[in-house]
Image (cartoon, rainbow, N blue to C red; front, side):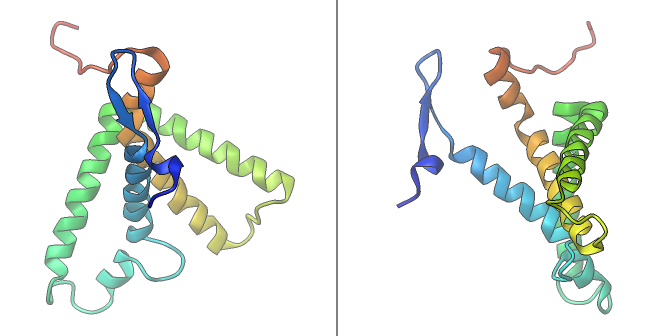
Length: 151
């Protein structure tokens, strides 16, 4: 039913089977949060919030829901990457965009294009924050642990 790349399974060193579907689901959720908050089309949360009274109907519920999602995203980014890791990720994305612009594959004079780049870049940073410990474990074999008072 789903393409093989979505349901592919790998076996870890200790014999546990893991699915690659978690990578794709977290990517979709990260992009949905970033693009749902703001995008150049005008179909986004900020447009919905600023059109009319922000306290009518379900808007307070949606405000709190988006606030909770962003709080979880920022906590995941800070906990796994810290602020300097998020800045390094943003710099890498900016260097990639610069390379695309230098090759002529991306028109950086168009504000709509830059809006898409910023929104998708934010989604990638959220995705990286959600998956940094898994990526680190895959690369090094060591789980990321929280710092303790003894450090």
